[in-house]
Structure formats: C-alpha cells, structure tokens
View 1 (tube, helix red, strand yellow):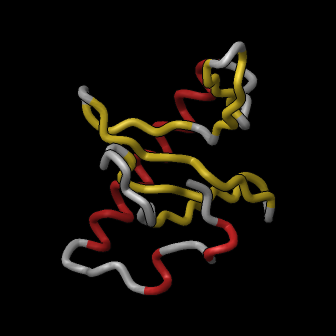
View 2 (view 1 turned 120 degrees about the horizontal axis):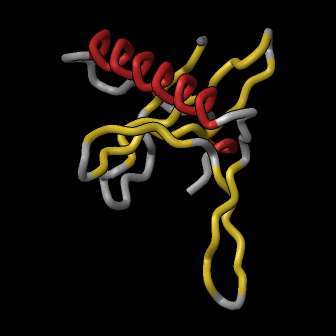
Length: 107
C-alpha cells in the first residue's frame, strides 16, 4: 500500500490524528482516509460525505469494499502504514510539506 500521511490542519476535538491519501491502483489516488483516536485505541476510517436528512446530518462512505473481510484487511494495513510513518517522524516537527495544498483542505 502506498499511503501519504499528514497531520490535520484543523484539530477540532483532537480525535483525528492523521489523514491519508492512498494510491490504490497504479496512480488512482483516494484522498481523505482518517486515522482516529477512539476510546478503544486507534482505528482507520474511509472518507465520507455528509448530507442532511430531515434536519439530521448523515454520513455516506465514499469508498466501498467488496466484502467486510477486504475492508478489515485494507484498514488494518492502513493502520500499520500509519504506525511506520509515525515511527519515522518521532522527534520531527511538522514542516510545510506535512499538509496538502490549501485548496485541497476540507474541514
């Protein structure tokens, strides 16, 4: 898996510890995967799109997997890649290259 991780520019609640753009197939890049610190530890999630239904915000996944097993394998591999990225950055401050271009940011 070829994933590019970066720290979120806006840390509203501090739960999102990293964002990732993943090259899933020879130049096809999916942006917006998240690594989140939850009550039971770190987990990865797919990009989502929010929308309103009867005044309530709902979220729809923007990446769909062929099976639950394939989803689990992919997200576990993403977490492993995040851990390696994090270990390689220990003691390194975020520089200008740690964020995507401003026109690609989503709050």
